Amino acid sequence: MCSAEAFADADIVFADGERSVRQGLRQILIDQGYRSLRDYGTLEIVEEEVERTVPDLIVMDALMDGGEATALTHRIRAGELGINPFVGIIITVWQPSEAVIRRIVSCGTDDIIVKPLSPKKLMERINVVAYKRKPFVVTSDYIGPDRRPKSAEERPGQKIPSIDVPNTLGAKARGRPLSMEALREMIGEAMFEINEQRLKRHSFQIAFLVGEILPAFQNNNLDDVAKKAIIRLSEIANEIGFRLQNSNFEHVANLCHNLIKVTASIRKDLRNPNRKDLDLLKPLSDAILISFNPDRNAAAMAGEINVMLDKFGTKR
Image (spheres, rainbow, N blue to C red):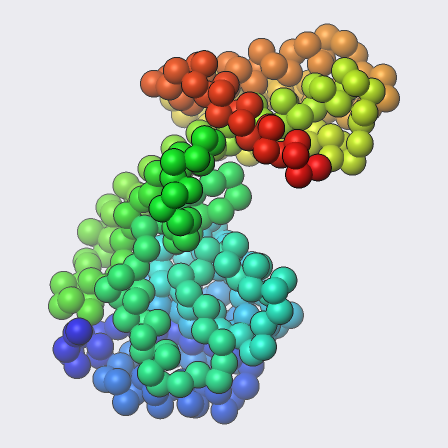
């Protein structure tokens, strides 16, 4: 693996509400050669440190401070906190429930460790982040390691490419630490690709939601699913419009602003919406989809969306 010098250079932040756990974790890491260690008892301080510095790895307890570790991870991955949205993150938890595990996995963490922590288990997981880290994927609501089975890549509507992201822990472990200039350049390239993929996924989701909403009105079956779909449609259009302000995609931002107006009008009178508003949903959706996917065949994209709608319909 890596030398003691490389271990010593890695900057690790760990947080746990129990002092004894922090002391035990510190000793494990010191025994393995790590020297740059910072431990904290609250996530508020971790947040300040992530904003102020550029750690290589964060290890934190899932349930401390009311379970805010997942929210903190999500903010980091979304680029809302700190310089490096791709910092290695491991979340620890005592006796996790299915709901807790689901929440941890969906926030974008690299790994989960069930306590109590053993030196062997901890070092195995750290080495995975350093040497065998998964590439990232981005969907409309997730940025994080690609945990899909290989077969999932071939499914219609699931063609989401993986993205190699900078790994400062891995770079130091191999004795090739990244300069801040190189790291910023790599982050910029990865974020450009991630934002492009996220916008494409958003465009597909808009088409999917419109495909759910229109039949509900046509069949006078405006159930809770359709109502939530309208709200979600407005939220996504809002996000895309915000991201594209003052960009080369200003024309798409205008389409999204029109979609926001249309959905707002529909929501004012769900039982008797203006027919013109309903008629505008599909043309606006199609225009946004094509704008973000100019290299894709329109019929093929429509086929993928129809497959997604059919699968969703069988689950309702």
